[in-house]
Image 1 (cartoon, rainbow, N blue to C red):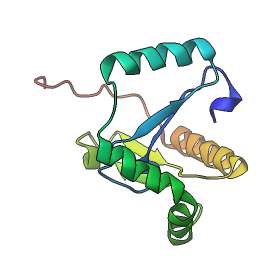
Image 2: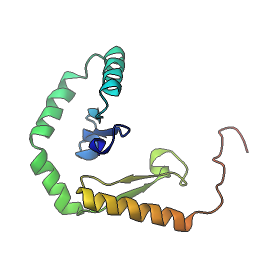
Image 3: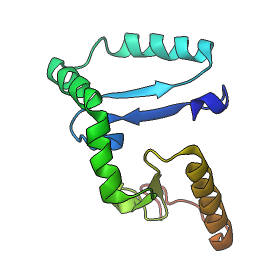
Length: 134
């Protein structure tokens, strides 16, 4: 996705994309060299390295990614998944959509369908509740 534009930044993690919860290993992808450098410096200044066991296990998950992801693809099929906000401690007006590792043409169609669904069900925007207010 990041290759489509310098303005796109993608993020991923092993816990989400590879079904390895607990491994707090993730990455950002950008094709903008200046942004990449700013992100790299920010990362270096905030955390020098991850835990050794996490890095070891993460490298093993990445080494075996074809077999790990292949099994999940067969189980789930090439579909999008929707999770209500309550799963993440948010209002159910918030939702997360995971498209996994879809081919670009399927991903584009999924985004188009999502846009159409949101447009067809959109009503007047309601303000989000603010903590401590009623």
